[in-house]
Length: 208
Ligand code: PRP
Ligand code: URA
Image (tube, rainbow, N blue to C red; front, side, top):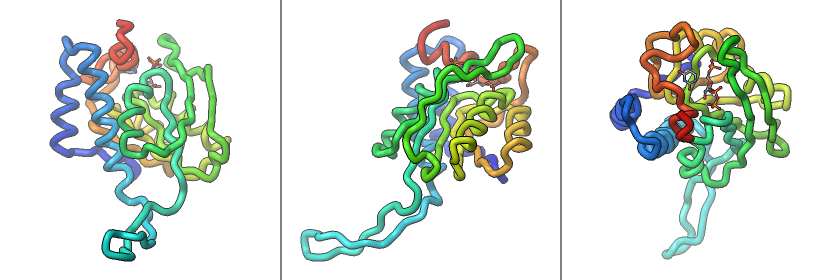
């Protein structure tokens, strides 16, 4: 099953705080980063480990370290930036590939305006971050682009997902796992998630 709705109490509590209509930019931003870190914790549970040893205070000590593919975090501009530091707080050495996409608010189609991928992205695990998965157009366009660049393992971290968007991503890219803090009810006539968070980019950047 490619969708994981993470029902951890801290995640549910923090997401509940984000849904308040009168939330300040500062609080919305802080919570988006905190949830970015908590989702990262969940989305990395199965990363492979390898055994090694280090020189400890009493001699050699067997320890484990993360093995396998290196990671690139892929924030979708703008709103994905709002989760990026939270993700990097747990994976500080990850490289960052930036994709700029804007949804045409009439057609709801995602249009790419920036693509800055790290070298050797084909050898990395890509972790896409974007608070909102609505129609799925932005996430599908990003996955298309990453696959064209050679990425073989892709995961997506979102704060709120609409069932319509999940179905669209599953149909287009059944191999991509989605980690979300909530699966909400539906999309409204303008493609906004209900109950959702409103316009996440505007709330993170204070442009509403
Ligand atoms: C929002 C959001 C997603 C996209 C989701 O970005 O951050 O990227 O919409 O909608 P979709 O699933 O229907 O594609 P938006 O285009 O509003 O840009 P912004 O982040 O710059 O505000
Ligand atoms: N983009 C947002 O910021 N919010 C939505 O509900 C849908 C798209």
